[in-house]
Length: 111
Image (cartoon, rainbow, N blue to C red; front, side, top):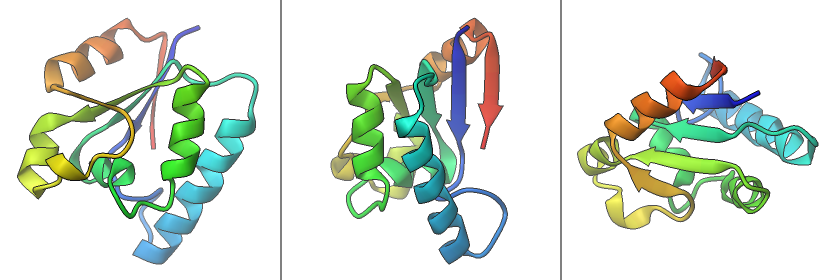
């Protein structure tokens, strides 16, 4: 089963920033240790900040990428936030690639 995850926030959930960050660190650390992983993780809007310099989850995202999870980051969002040169993990792509990944997935999980 092809599972795709979406990160649209610089953290997890609708909570104060510190709690969002703590939750995303915990979530991705647990996900990286699971045997079954998503096929792809997509990052757009504020979610692109998770793959950039200074992110608390870069190590866990690298582990996931090394385990075969494709990380796709929205180029339009990176340009909007001025973060294009700060990407440290993943592959920069456009919205067409994000749409295609979602359409080809058996299951899409939005976090």
